[in-house]
Amino acid sequence: MKVTAIQHKYMTRAFWEERLRNIIPELRDQLISYRRSGAAPGVFRSMVLKEVGDHFRSWRVIILMVIILLTCIGSLYTALTAISDTGSAGNSDETFFFLHLFTLSDGSLPPFFVFIGFLGPLLGISLGFDAVNS
Image (tube, rainbow, N blue to C red; front, side, top):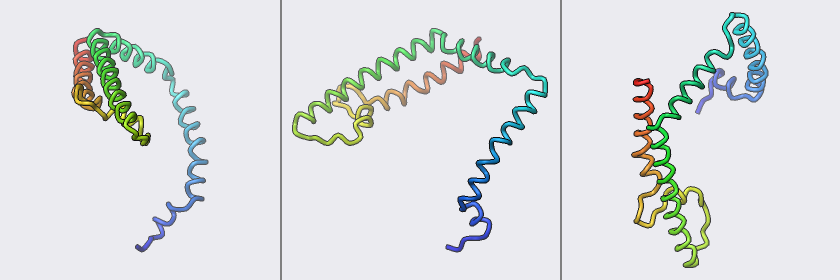
């Protein structure tokens, strides 16, 4: 594969070191120009925090979060029992333990990612309805 001069410029370490050194002064200049513009620095932040707080304190979202938490606990319990059953049989393979917690199932409950595939969009729809109705 033939490397052009422009591609070679972006592949060098010196280019990226210089680029990273120039980022901080550029950000500082932008921050100073924003402060000089006369905009109040905390108005937008406080408005966003209020709106997000209102969303997460609504009953719809609280109930959905509790349902998601309960399904997580149930799925973790079934995965841990499935792991302990296979662990007692002499299988000492402990690779990707955290991944197995959310993907294994013994058949009594689906794995956690299946629940999230259903409950995640419901949480998004709930946040959308809250945004429109309030």
